[in-house]
Image 1 (cartoon, rainbow, N blue to C red):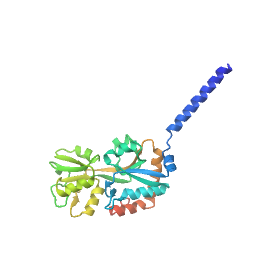
Image 2 (spheres, rainbow, N blue to C red):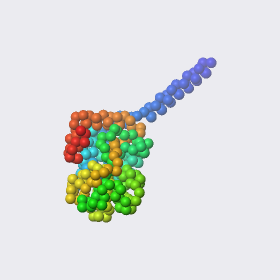
Image 3 (cartoon, rainbow, N blue to C red):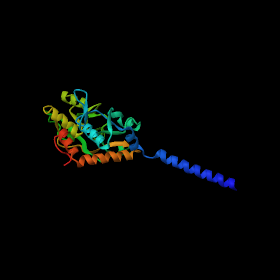
Image 4 (spheres, one colour):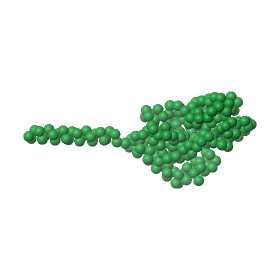
Length: 262
């Protein structure tokens, strides 16, 4: 009888230990890992000015870059930027190439199936940009029969797919390439986030203008693996503090010319 009780006790302890180990292995240690490393790695596509881009000296800068560095300071972490092509950035996050994506990522229902996000820290969407001296496009209805440029993998592709009559949607690896083709007259319009297109207008006022009507508006957030809730929450806390202390307003004025947080 004692032997039977002993065996039962051993089995019970073994099951308890197994369950305990299972819980530990599946626990969310995302924040702990980052803190232990002392560095948070951030994936982004560095061809999307003024959010994230390389300047003439090959230094990566932009609104998101400044914001990321300020978040790192709030969290007490060093920041490592991992430049990644947009068309592979979500797979790279899943493969643990970096801890977070902060690269003007629109929050969509499709993306929420595989990722978790912070609250929106900016609102983007899809606006139409044309050459300054071009008057044939004044709304989405005027895209009929036109060739339109977009960046590959952006939400612009889905938005334009709902419109009928567009001659061709030409996909580019970067917005820079799209705007160069627009300037050269190889395409009639570019569809992109308003912040991005407005930056090109500010830099080249004589070349481009934005059509008044927007195709849509989209919340932009920072993306994390679904398991990394603790890291996402700590990142969100840092963003909230930057918003409260006026840092994000200063960055907005620096990069967009006005305070989008008012």
